[in-house]
Image 1 (tube, helix red, strand yellow):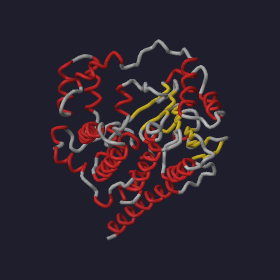
Image 2: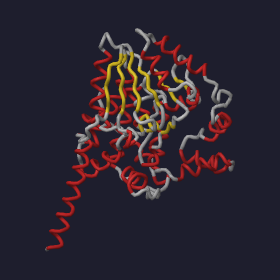
Image 3: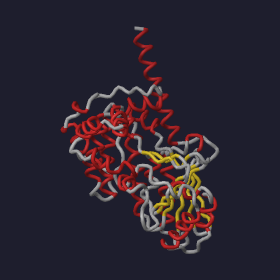
Image 4: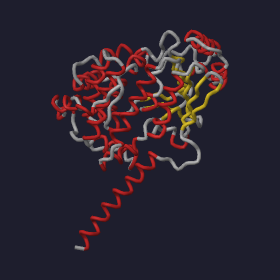
Length: 368
């Protein structure tokens, strides 16, 4: 009897501790605000201010950024919106996944609310009527990608590390714009992207100051400033895109109608490049790989809004499954880097299982 009571209260205590961590995600006790929202001249400036955790995005930040972005969008005295990260190491290393994981384990609504409100914010960035400039200096992953790539301008530096590592933790990646940016080496026309090493010699502060000094800037005005900084820097100007020599291999090896086919292509090729890709894929969640493959195929022809609706469905499928929790455990909690995926092979992940992940959530679907 005593053992039963002890186990019951131990379980309750663990649940309470989890809920306390979730509540801490919602209500910060820090004196320093987690996001700074400032008006500098005619510019609205958003600074993610959690440098100790690489500016990881949490619900508090989302709920501050979204209404302010909408306010600036409709403010006649705000001409441009700039978003950046504090601390010098990261723009944003992603969403605060550990808090979402704890919420999912105890059935807390944060597991639904976080992704819903994050994607609503991403859509607002994508359709923002004012020029939106993301200064992606440092680590930019997962949720940080969502805060940057959907805006009009993305400015990278020599310190930018851009990644979507979700399949390593049993989640899925975002197909909209990311795949096309990677395919073109991150170089978009029309002032869309300022590529990494180009501005080391001049620096983000100088660029930001020049942007802030613009009076009622048009998209062309901003593009000219970005182009001028790129043209003034000679750092690594002669270096080709790092994957340039592998583009034809990528097109050939990854042109298959299934993930299994891609893996077969890589193994049959036998080159150092192919072997490295095969090894990487072998470590990922088989379920996430199959979902992501279909997601990239379908997302290539969808609007941002439709992609986000699809992605929200997939996020909730991950919350219902087990690989997401196992991936977070292996990568972020225990850090043993040895997740036990279920199913453990690509062949065990049926088309029906994948179809269920894409199915409508009814009245719980994301509405934009």
